[in-house]
Length: 411
Image (tube, rainbow, N blue to C red):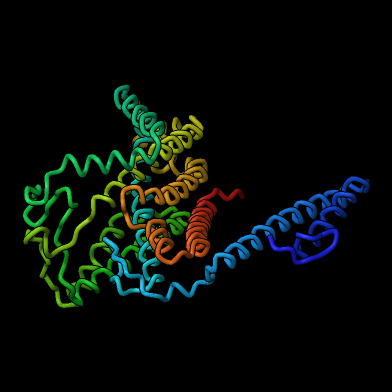
């Protein structure tokens, strides 16, 4: 610390002195004043003052230490050339790109493994949670063993286990497995064909998005109509037709292209098509399976929270077990399942930072490379913290909105 004041407070910064005096006054008032409301406000003011004192100390100490070591601060380095390659990217990238674009690549890779992991973990978790309550003793025991086994192994060990299995059990590149012509599986990853760039394929992708949106909207409209009139519309068939028909029509309008880029072994690697790396497989599989065990427990608890009388009423009406599960149990259980499951989604996203252990180029991995090359430790760590904070808050907001949309409205 550099002393910027003199006298009794030498060695302290003016803001620290101000916050310290305010904290002392708040503490004195909180002890002496009898009014409970005012006393509570003074205790809150004391807590805020102490936090601000600590914040100013840390900020000043950081600035002084950076200045002593002649380390420039700021985010100007994001516009400089990165000069390192990234093994996989969702957007065009090369060593001539900027550090800012490298960070964006890492963020998109983190989003990819997190979103896909959440989807698979939800499917597995809900399925295992339902199976853990089945009447079949063997299935019930297997589901319980799945949950207890996976939950009691650290997630980092899961990632190492998956990566070791992929890189040691699969054959080398030249002996790659090919269950279907054009599809190959080896230690280098999973290689498969992709459509050649064409207007029709782009139109089909947009058509698929539009079809899903229309299917969701049609299902919601049909549900509202059923609530008003009691009329049941064939929403399942309509949704399937929209999801398949809209992209098909867009593909036909775009010229109906059929050309595919097929991977072929040339030299020391495959050319053509695209691939999924073993690093992504390891992180995606490990996080999905690990998180699904917790979601399974949340699902089991939510189902058990539904009154047994609701299930018996459904059976009395002659409904099948599948209809009872879909229409009676799960809609009520969701109110119990969603809050803890949201926490698991957040945990999965944050646990994706462990992918640096197997070399998957996520945000943390690329930020570490950037930090080593530029020395901008504070800025790189701040970017990581802000990105994960924003992602977690966005996930929480989305899940809270969905939770509010399905809650039972009492009349």
